[in-house]
Image (cartoon, rainbow, N blue to C red; front, side, top):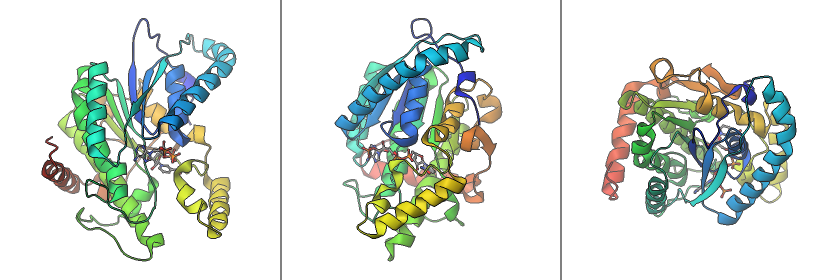
Length: 326
Ligand SMILES: NC(=O)c1ccc[n+]([C@@H]2O[C@H](COP(=O)([O-])OP(=O)(O)OC[C@H]3O[C@@H](n4cnc5c(N)ncnc54)[C@H](OP(=O)(O)O)[C@@H]3O)[C@@H](O)[C@H]2O)c1
C-alpha cells in the first residue's frame, strides 16, 4: 500500500492545485478529501445533500488539525512542508443531469483549471428505478452523470494536463460478455439482477476512462478498484432492510474481516492515481489499479476497445437525445 506522505505536498500560495470529487462526504471519498486537503488542494465536494457535505467539511477540517502535529514530524523525513488547502461545497445530484450540467458550469466559472477530477460517487445494488432523465438509476449515478460531468469539465482539465480518476469496482467482472446498454436487467429477483446493473455501470465507467485516455492523451485517465471496504455507506440499502438487514450486516462484516480494508486504506488507490508523480500520461494512460494503488488488470470486456467504443457512442447518442450535446 502506498504511503500518502510519500506523495507531493503543495503550498496553495505558491502552486495552487484544484481537485473536484463526487461523493466526498462519506466512506472512501471522505478520506480522499482529507488527504487532498492535507496535501494543499482546494477541493470541491460535489454532492446532493448539503447538510451531509457541510458536516463532512467540518469533520475533515477537525481531523486534519488533529493530525497536523504528528504528520509534520513524519513528513519532515520526506523533506516536505504541510500547508492545508481549502474545502468547498457544490450542489450536484447525479440522478438529475440538468443539475450536473449546472454544477459543471458553476465549477468552470469558479476555476479555469482543474488538476484532478475524481468520479467517486456511486450507489450499489438497489432496486430497479428510472431517473427523471429515463436511465436506470445505477447506470446514471455511477456512469452517465460522471460521463457528462467529465466532458463538461474537460477544457479546464486539459488546460493543466490534469488527471481524471474513475472509481470502478471488482464487481464490474460480473459482466462476462459485452452487454448492450439498452438492456434494462429489470428482472426478479432483484437481489441477483441488481448486481448485473451495477456491473454494467462499472464496466462502462472503466471503458469510458479508457476511451478518454485515447482521445485526450495529454490528460492522465485512470480507473481503479479501491478494495473491499465494508464500513462505508455503500451497503446500507442491504443492511437497513428490516430483519434480514442484520444478516447482511453480519455477512459484510465477515467479508470485511477476512478480505476487507479500512475506509482510509480504501482511499489509497485513488490518492496514488491522483497524486503520484511516478504516473505519466505517456506511460500509464488508461491503466487500472487496485487496492492500495497496485497496478492491475480489468476484465476482458472492460479492456476491449471495440466494446469501449460502442459504450462511448451509445452514451453520446443517449445524451444528445436528451438535449446534452457532447
Ligand atoms: N466500499 C467498497 O467495498 C467498494 C468496492 C468497490 C468499489 N467501490 C466504489 O468506491 C466508490 C465510493 O464508495 P464508498 O464505498 O465510499 O460508498 P459511500 O460511502 O456510500 O459513498 C458514496 C458517495 O456517493 C454519493 N452519492 C450517491 N448517490 C449520489 C447522487 N445521486 N448524487 C450525488 N452523490 C451521490 C453519496 O452521497 P450521499 O451521502 O448523499 O448518499 C456518498 O457520498 C464508489 O464508486 C463505489 O462503487 C467501493
